[in-house]
Image 1 (cartoon, rainbow, N blue to C red):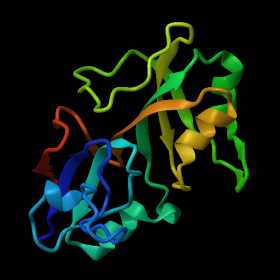
Image 2 (cartoon, rainbow, N blue to C red):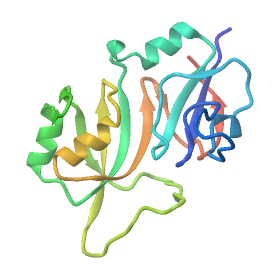
Image 3 (cartoon, rainbow, N blue to C red):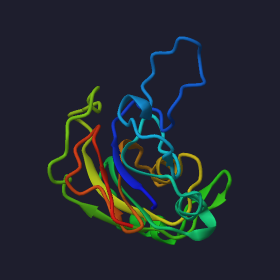
Length: 184
């Protein structure tokens, strides 16, 4: 029987079970939160990003979730610097030119601060003179640090990035640093 785990990855946690970086490293990994044999992450989430990760013991499902050719939608809540105008949102919707080429069109909308948002440690920098806001951004590809590069390209650097949904699986009320079994 296939097992699917949903995990709300905290900020500053590697999206792998071991840290093959510096010997004696104290960086936190998935093994600090999940002690289930033979489940592996379906895709990655940068150390400085938070939110939903799907883990499974089914290699085919893992490939279907993580391989960009399957175009599984991933939705992010993104706190950005500044308030985007219509031109910035339109650019994200049409595709943004990055160093590695044009992104595929994204779905984007400005949203209220996500409900029941947990505090981040360390907190996001706050500047009285520069407003910020939240957007929901859905992409169907997975380039390295793509969301951060897209928002920066339209003049609104990312301050905080939370993955809220992967395909059918949603973060919902899953608390940061916790996991649950999911239907699949």
